[in-house]
Image 1: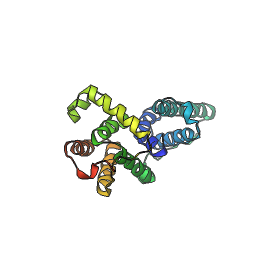
Image 2: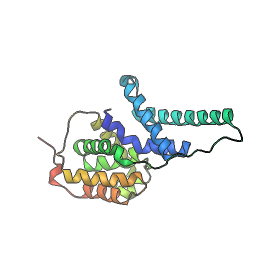
Image 3: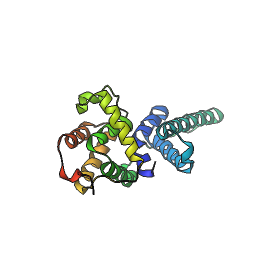
Image 4: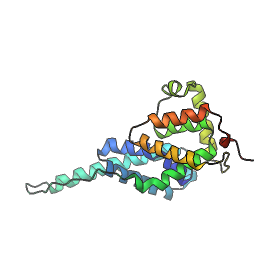
Length: 203
Protein backbone atom coordinates (compact mmCIF):
# COMPACT_ATOMS: atom_id res chain seq x y z
CA UNK A 1 0.00 0.00 0.00
CA UNK A 2 1.44 3.36 -1.05
CA UNK A 3 1.51 6.50 1.08
CA UNK A 4 -1.38 8.01 -0.89
CA UNK A 5 -3.48 4.85 -0.53
CA UNK A 6 -2.78 4.57 3.22
CA UNK A 7 -3.80 8.21 3.64
CA UNK A 8 -7.33 7.30 2.56
CA UNK A 9 -7.82 5.85 6.03
CA UNK A 10 -6.97 9.16 7.73
CA UNK A 11 -10.60 10.20 8.48
CA UNK A 12 -11.40 6.80 10.01
CA UNK A 13 -8.23 6.81 12.11
CA UNK A 14 -8.88 10.38 13.25
CA UNK A 15 -12.41 9.43 14.32
CA UNK A 16 -11.14 6.47 16.34
CA UNK A 17 -8.43 8.54 18.03
CA UNK A 18 -10.82 11.41 18.76
CA UNK A 19 -13.30 9.09 20.47
CA UNK A 20 -10.50 7.98 22.81
CA UNK A 21 -8.61 11.21 23.55
CA UNK A 22 -11.51 13.67 23.14
CA UNK A 23 -9.40 16.32 21.40
CA UNK A 24 -9.15 16.86 17.65
CA UNK A 25 -5.59 18.22 17.66
CA UNK A 26 -4.30 15.38 19.84
CA UNK A 27 -6.19 12.85 17.70
CA UNK A 28 -4.41 14.24 14.63
CA UNK A 29 -1.07 13.77 16.42
CA UNK A 30 -2.00 10.14 17.05
CA UNK A 31 -2.83 9.68 13.36
CA UNK A 32 0.45 11.25 12.28
CA UNK A 33 2.39 8.97 14.64
CA UNK A 34 0.45 6.00 13.28
CA UNK A 35 1.54 6.82 9.73
CA UNK A 36 5.14 7.37 10.84
CA UNK A 37 5.13 3.90 12.41
CA UNK A 38 3.46 2.44 9.32
CA UNK A 39 6.09 3.73 6.93
CA UNK A 40 8.84 2.29 9.15
CA UNK A 41 7.19 -1.13 9.17
CA UNK A 42 8.17 -4.07 7.00
CA UNK A 43 5.03 -4.13 4.79
CA UNK A 44 5.36 -7.78 3.82
CA UNK A 45 4.84 -8.71 7.48
CA UNK A 46 1.45 -6.94 7.59
CA UNK A 47 -1.43 -9.07 6.29
CA UNK A 48 -4.20 -6.48 6.78
CA UNK A 49 -3.07 -2.85 6.44
CA UNK A 50 -6.38 -1.36 7.59
CA UNK A 51 -6.48 -3.53 10.72
CA UNK A 52 -2.85 -2.66 11.46
CA UNK A 53 -3.51 1.09 11.17
CA UNK A 54 -6.63 0.91 13.35
CA UNK A 55 -4.86 -1.13 16.02
CA UNK A 56 -1.89 1.21 15.96
CA UNK A 57 -3.89 4.43 16.34
CA UNK A 58 -5.98 2.88 19.11
CA UNK A 59 -2.92 1.76 21.05
CA UNK A 60 -1.18 5.11 20.64
CA UNK A 61 -4.31 6.94 21.82
CA UNK A 62 -4.74 4.70 24.87
CA UNK A 63 -1.05 5.08 25.75
CA UNK A 64 -1.43 8.85 25.45
CA UNK A 65 -4.33 8.83 27.92
CA UNK A 66 -2.42 6.63 30.36
CA UNK A 67 0.61 8.90 30.18
CA UNK A 68 -1.51 11.99 30.81
CA UNK A 69 -3.27 10.32 33.72
CA UNK A 70 0.06 9.29 35.28
CA UNK A 71 1.42 12.81 34.88
CA UNK A 72 -1.63 14.29 36.58
CA UNK A 73 -1.37 11.97 39.55
CA UNK A 74 2.36 12.61 39.92
CA UNK A 75 2.10 16.37 39.68
CA UNK A 76 -1.24 17.00 41.34
CA UNK A 77 -0.89 19.96 43.73
CA UNK A 78 -3.19 22.86 44.75
CA UNK A 79 -1.05 25.17 42.62
CA UNK A 80 -1.14 23.05 39.49
CA UNK A 81 -1.87 25.46 36.61
CA UNK A 82 -4.71 24.65 34.28
CA UNK A 83 -3.88 23.92 30.68
CA UNK A 84 -5.79 23.86 27.43
CA UNK A 85 -5.15 22.33 24.05
CA UNK A 86 -5.98 24.06 20.81
CA UNK A 87 -8.63 21.83 19.19
CA UNK A 88 -8.59 23.62 15.84
CA UNK A 89 -7.30 21.41 13.04
CA UNK A 90 -6.17 22.86 9.75
CA UNK A 91 -6.92 20.70 6.76
CA UNK A 92 -4.54 22.84 4.72
CA UNK A 93 -1.75 20.79 6.29
CA UNK A 94 -3.00 17.62 4.62
CA UNK A 95 -4.38 19.17 1.41
CA UNK A 96 -1.64 17.69 -0.77
CA UNK A 97 -2.04 14.26 0.83
CA UNK A 98 -5.80 14.25 0.19
CA UNK A 99 -5.28 15.36 -3.41
CA UNK A 100 -2.86 12.50 -4.06
CA UNK A 101 -5.23 9.99 -2.50
CA UNK A 102 -8.24 11.17 -4.49
CA UNK A 103 -6.19 11.10 -7.69
CA UNK A 104 -5.31 7.46 -7.00
CA UNK A 105 -9.01 6.58 -6.65
CA UNK A 106 -9.97 8.37 -9.85
CA UNK A 107 -7.19 6.77 -11.90
CA UNK A 108 -7.47 3.21 -10.59
CA UNK A 109 -11.12 2.60 -9.71
CA UNK A 110 -14.36 2.58 -11.68
CA UNK A 111 -17.09 4.87 -10.26
CA UNK A 112 -18.99 2.11 -8.41
CA UNK A 113 -15.79 0.67 -6.95
CA UNK A 114 -14.71 4.13 -5.87
CA UNK A 115 -18.05 4.87 -4.21
CA UNK A 116 -18.08 1.67 -2.17
CA UNK A 117 -14.44 2.04 -1.16
CA UNK A 118 -14.85 5.63 0.01
CA UNK A 119 -18.05 5.02 1.96
CA UNK A 120 -17.18 1.61 3.44
CA UNK A 121 -13.42 1.69 3.91
CA UNK A 122 -12.73 5.39 4.49
CA UNK A 123 -15.88 6.50 6.34
CA UNK A 124 -16.86 3.09 7.78
CA UNK A 125 -20.43 2.98 6.42
CA UNK A 126 -22.17 -0.32 7.12
CA UNK A 127 -22.95 -2.69 4.24
CA UNK A 128 -26.60 -2.50 5.29
CA UNK A 129 -26.61 1.24 4.52
CA UNK A 130 -25.01 1.07 1.07
CA UNK A 131 -27.93 -0.41 -0.95
CA UNK A 132 -30.18 2.54 -0.12
CA UNK A 133 -27.40 5.01 -0.94
CA UNK A 134 -25.96 3.45 -4.10
CA UNK A 135 -28.85 1.33 -5.39
CA UNK A 136 -26.82 -1.86 -5.22
CA UNK A 137 -27.20 -5.01 -3.13
CA UNK A 138 -24.99 -5.68 -0.12
CA UNK A 139 -23.41 -8.64 -1.92
CA UNK A 140 -22.68 -6.48 -4.94
CA UNK A 141 -21.08 -3.86 -2.68
CA UNK A 142 -18.86 -6.53 -1.11
CA UNK A 143 -17.74 -7.62 -4.57
CA UNK A 144 -17.06 -4.03 -5.60
CA UNK A 145 -15.01 -3.42 -2.46
CA UNK A 146 -12.98 -6.56 -3.05
CA UNK A 147 -12.23 -5.49 -6.62
CA UNK A 148 -11.35 -1.97 -5.47
CA UNK A 149 -8.90 -3.24 -2.85
CA UNK A 150 -7.25 -5.48 -5.42
CA UNK A 151 -6.91 -2.72 -8.02
CA UNK A 152 -5.44 -0.29 -5.52
CA UNK A 153 -2.55 -2.67 -4.95
CA UNK A 154 -1.76 -2.70 -8.67
CA UNK A 155 0.43 -0.19 -10.46
CA UNK A 156 -1.84 0.09 -13.51
CA UNK A 157 -3.82 3.30 -13.93
CA UNK A 158 -7.04 2.44 -15.75
CA UNK A 159 -8.69 5.84 -16.23
CA UNK A 160 -7.80 9.32 -17.41
CA UNK A 161 -7.71 12.00 -14.74
CA UNK A 162 -9.71 15.20 -15.24
CA UNK A 163 -8.64 18.12 -13.01
CA UNK A 164 -12.20 19.39 -12.48
CA UNK A 165 -13.38 15.95 -11.32
CA UNK A 166 -10.44 15.74 -8.92
CA UNK A 167 -11.15 19.21 -7.55
CA UNK A 168 -14.83 18.39 -7.00
CA UNK A 169 -14.05 15.10 -5.27
CA UNK A 170 -11.46 16.72 -2.99
CA UNK A 171 -13.89 19.44 -1.94
CA UNK A 172 -16.68 16.98 -1.19
CA UNK A 173 -14.29 14.62 0.59
CA UNK A 174 -13.09 17.39 2.91
CA UNK A 175 -16.71 18.28 3.74
CA UNK A 176 -17.36 14.62 4.57
CA UNK A 177 -14.44 14.56 7.03
CA UNK A 178 -16.39 17.22 8.94
CA UNK A 179 -19.58 15.13 8.88
CA UNK A 180 -21.20 16.70 5.81
CA UNK A 181 -21.76 13.71 3.51
CA UNK A 182 -24.54 14.99 1.22
CA UNK A 183 -22.32 16.44 -1.54
CA UNK A 184 -19.88 13.53 -1.47
CA UNK A 185 -22.65 10.94 -1.80
CA UNK A 186 -24.28 12.96 -4.60
CA UNK A 187 -20.92 13.19 -6.39
CA UNK A 188 -20.29 9.43 -6.10
CA UNK A 189 -23.81 8.53 -7.27
CA UNK A 190 -23.59 10.84 -10.27
CA UNK A 191 -20.31 9.23 -11.30
CA UNK A 192 -21.99 5.82 -11.17
CA UNK A 193 -25.15 6.77 -13.07
CA UNK A 194 -23.56 8.79 -15.87
CA UNK A 195 -21.26 7.21 -18.45
CA UNK A 196 -18.63 9.94 -18.63
CA UNK A 197 -16.34 9.65 -21.62
CA UNK A 198 -13.30 10.71 -19.63
CA UNK A 199 -13.58 7.60 -17.45
CA UNK A 200 -12.98 5.22 -20.37
CA UNK A 201 -9.98 2.99 -19.68
CA UNK A 202 -6.67 4.20 -21.05
CA UNK A 203 -5.19 2.22 -23.95
